[in-house]
Amino acid sequence: MSEDRQTVFSGLQPTGNVHIGNYLGALVNWVKLQDNYDTIYCVVDLHAITVNYDPAEYQKERLEAAKVLIATGIDPNRSLFYFQSQVPQHAELSWILGTMTPTGVLNRMTQFKEKAESAGSNLGLYSYPVLMAADILLYRANLVPVGDDQRQHLEMTRDLAERFNNRFGEVFPIPEALIPEKTARVMSLTDPTAKMSKSAPNEKSRVLILDSPDVIRKKIKSAVTDSEPTVRYDWDEKPGISNLLEIMSGCTDRSVDDLVSEYADSGYGVFKEAVAEAVVTKLAPIRSAYQQLDDREVARLMQKGALDARTRAEGFAQEIRKVTGLSAP
Image (cartoon, rainbow, N blue to C red; front, side, top):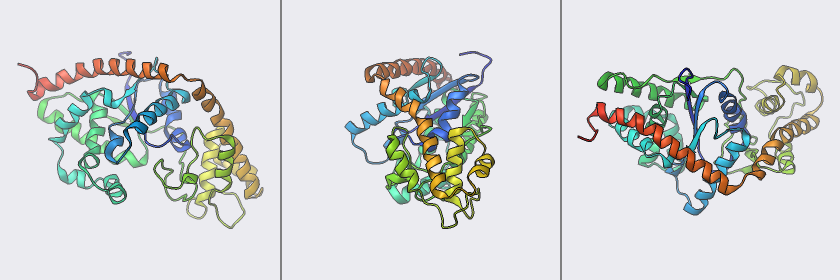
């Protein structure tokens, strides 16, 4: 790690498959951040077990998520990259921070309310934001790439860092949100008023990174739009078309205005075909890179990453134990 570079932390859940919303909304920027920051990325597998799951299938999903991230450009030789569960200091710090987290704060977390309604409530789901705070603070991260749905959690992380520092001394930097200059706003293909999600029951709602070209074309072709044939950017009146414009812009690096100028009067059929081909072209190198990855080699890289992460985390954890009175006598 270069001492003059700020530390960036972020994680991705392994449940389901990585979709184009994850890629355009986060992973594209994760890859770019490796050039100028000390980057720490992990597959947050502890976060993902707050719902019922099959252990054998979960093992496969974890490895698949790691492979997809590597295929998109996350380089284990440039970033600290590992499975969260392999670094016990995450859970240790989460417990310490949990003793300082008012239940009233957790009760206000909107994601907990939404997920509890659909998946049922449990302590892990309730304390999810505390573990997320531990993930970030453990490595003294300065910057956290976040979307709108995680801003509330980051604010809680900042509050917990300040609580801890006020009580035990200046241990944690107060992390800031890292908002990329350009990021796509990717919504569900079947309900463009909702964010594209791994867990949505309708598989047509999302384009997966590993979908075949034919599947991608079918999903884009069936994307919900509206009855007016004009292609224009208007989230209030035309959320479906606006969503496809965002996706195409993210896949082609062309501005939305430029795309509107070209396809305004082309008709939805022609426009959807163009969007589909842009997505197919963008994802083709990732699918190719994924297919060339060897499972055993990726597993080895993740084990090495976990060892490096544990070593680094333990140095920070010792300081935390010392100031909190938990260090060995």
